[in-house]
Each structure stands twice: as structure tokens, then as C-alpha cells.
Image (cartoon, rainbow over the protein chains, first blue to last red):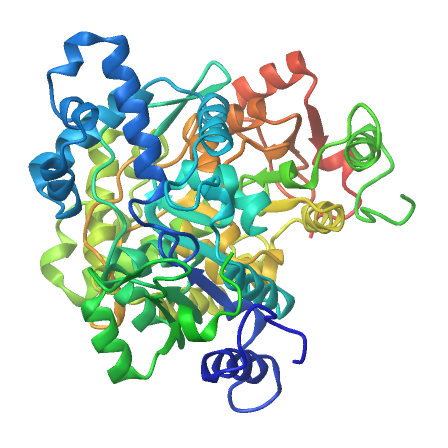
Length: 294
Length: 294
């Protein structure tokens, strides 16, 4: 495998990946039937930049700010007030998954997109990606996808793996970019989703609160529900990916340790790294293992 | 398309299918991008024999009878009593979707398979298919899949369609046979499903009642949830398939009109045929359009 993964340096991480894939497809003790070759990846922080906030958070907050602008009665209420005033304390409670704050946010999201058709939602998401720029890199979030990971997708697909993204993020948000950006059909995206009603030949989004997001054990549960299997290969970067990584035969854990080219942080990933060291997961240093990031 | 669909007679139904597929893949007004080529099919009565009862009903009733045998305290209760006594009136209430009867059945199903792992369930289903014989044909249900439909799957796949089965039947039951029988990966099966919990590295089935089955408008809703699209091509045989067929550009409706080689019935399909005539769906006469059935 000479020209594979060109954006990866020739380090132990790259060798672990290529050795695993080679053994999987070669007759012998580690051969795996094509039907069982399922690979699953987290999205935020694994496939693209998630700092200072995941792209979808920016998308949602912009929509809430616009709603507050159009309807002044909302501007005094949470979460609209906090969004408009850029209230750091409130954002901290979101990050800490404060149940009251999360519920209020879910209700505002449900209200904002009630009755939206898939085509209308797609227009909004495309508009976001074509106009909004990430604050540090000053380019569209869609350009901040990690090139080494896209090469890994291609390598896996070339070896008859079916690749899925499994994220707590919004299914329909990710699906807008999945085909052109990841080379994955929409059906290969697993994520948090609203319910849609089919009536008079048309699908429209329901106002129901989304409820629990597929994190932690929810990841392997959703992967099984969708694919009928647990993953053979999995990649993630945070504590919420632990169960998905445990369930896989080969686990890849991304370490954000590159202040110069991206960000350096281990918040909400402390347990994952401790467990990864113990279990011998392949830990990818963005600084050392990736030649190119974007 | 000379040698395609060899089990189909050279009638209008076959020509409608091959013309539609040819137009879909050929540059011109009716060309459809590969990404949008989703084909979805019902299972019972569309892919295999559903009379006198769908195979899964036989599977479930055998499991309930066995439970009543092992635990005599159950034998006096419904639905166990009716199953053991082969109570025709009770089965009529199941067929008529009597809410009280359906709930009791769902609770019994939940109780029977609580804690079962996917591997254990697969063993039970494989055992069923390898030992139980359908009453009229005296062969395994797995041999009563319609050959013309399997050829249609192959033709669609050869033209870059992604083929899914979407049934009110059990997802995990169908997935046991989907790969070897239909040539579809498990992830291409959409159906009614129990929840599974992932704990200590293991998936096990929860006792939760399954709840509403994906019928009628639930079919396009589930297809959208799973694939991000509505179908381009759809096939069904009953009223519960109407919305899925309406949502598709090409709709195939199977008419069970072959007493000699299969069964003849239109019960629970009356509305579908009326609508199919009106909308110009391709109605397949098993008697006239299929050279071979199995």
C-alpha cells in the first residue's frame, strides 16, 4: 500500500490502519467477510473542526437569532435572549448538558423548523455553508473537513467496507453535505433526527422535541439498529464515542494536539484517552500523524 | 435488454419496468442521478408467500406455544391460549388489527424475547427456516421467495439503484435471510423493531412493547428517515403500501391472481388496486406476467 493515505505521515498510526485493513481482506486468521465490514465514524472533531463550536451549533444559533429579530416577543425569552446577547454563561450550561437549558433549546429548535420540508431545510443548510465563515480560518465550515479522514474513507470503501457517520449531531443537517463532502450516500448518515410526517404526498417536519441524542451506548445501539451489526472499524475523538470504539475490532481515536494548524484540547475526551491507552486503540496525533489537515 | 428478467413473460408489465429503468439511466428528460435511485419493496406478499399467514406469524406463534408449554401458568392466558387452541376467531381479530388483541400480542412478544442477543435470535430464526415447512408447498418459507422479484432486484442493482425492503414485519427476522436470499445487506432492511440495549460490550433486546408498525404513511416516513429520500421505484401488494407507491415515480403492484401456482386474493388490497388503475401503476398479474414463480 504505497500511495494510500497520502496526507498521513509514515508513522505507527498509518501502519496500524493499513495493516489492519490488509489483514481483513487477506485470507487468513484475521480475514473478515465483506458483509461484516462496517466502519463508523463520529462527525464533530473526528471529521471536521468542532471549535469554538460545532458548525451546526452556529447554524442553529443564527436561526434562533433571526427568529428573535422577526418576533420581538421571543427576544426576551430563553434561549433566544442568550443567543442574541451572546451570553457565555448560558453557552457553558449548554456545553455542560444542563437538562433545563437543553430542553428549552430543543423546544426552540422544534418550533423553528416545524412544518419545514426536507427541500426547504436543505436550502437553509446550503445557504449557511455558502455564506458563513468559520471564525479562525475564515472559510466555509465545509472546507474544514480533515483530508486524512476522507482518504481513510476512500481506502475503506476500496476494501469493501461500508462507511457510516454516526453522530449526536443532526441527521438532516449532515445529509446535506454527506454526498459531495464525504462521498457517502445520505443513507450512510446516522444522527439525531426530528420526525417527519408524510401527508398529501409531502413530507414535513413535526414539532416534537427531539429527545435523547445518540451518545455513549446510544452509538452502538443506533449502529446496530441501522446496520444489523456492530462496527468492525470505528473512529472518534471524545468520551461520547467510547462505547462505539469499544464495540469495534479496530478503534481510532483522534487527538487534537495541533495548536498551530487546528486546536489543542482534551476536554470531554479524558476518559476516552485513558481507555484508549489501556486497550491499545490507535491514537492519532494530528500534529505528528497528519501531513496535511485540510 | 434481451436476457433481463428471464422469469417474466414478455408482456406490458415487463416492458414498463425495462423502459422505465432504461430511461432513468439514459441521458435525456427522464435521466435520474444515481444518488436518487432508491427502490423500495414491501415483503409479505410482494417478495414471498403470505398465505395462509406470513412466515413470521408462524414463527411467533410457535414461540408462544412453546412458552405456554414450558410455563403452564401462561397456557390459560391470552394470546397463549388462542395460539395453543388454534382459535380461529382470535386469529381473525389479529388480522383485523383489534387494538386489545394486538397489544396483548405485543406484550407476549416483548416478554418472549426480552434479553435475547442478536446472535441468539438469529439461531432461532435459522432453526425456523431450516425445519418448518409451509403447509401447501411443503418446503421452507425461504424457498417461497418470488424469483421474478429477485431478478428485478438484480436488474435494479445493475443500474445503480440501491434496493431496500420496507415492511411492517420484523426487521431482525428479515435481516437473517436478507443477504443470502435477497442479496441485500442487513442495512437495506427497514421494518418493525425492538430496542436493543448496549451494555458491558453486549447488545440485548429490551422488553419494551414495539408500538406502531410502519404501515401506510409510515412507509414513506421510515424510508425518508433511513435513506434521506423518497423512493424512485417502489413495489407492493396491499393497501398498507399505497403511500409508498404514491411517493415513487414508478409503482409496481402485485396481483395475486394465480390459484394454480400460488393463491388468489385481493383482501386488504382493494383500495390499492382502485388507486393503481387510476394512477396508471404497473399492475403485475402473477398468472400472466410471471413465467416462473419460485
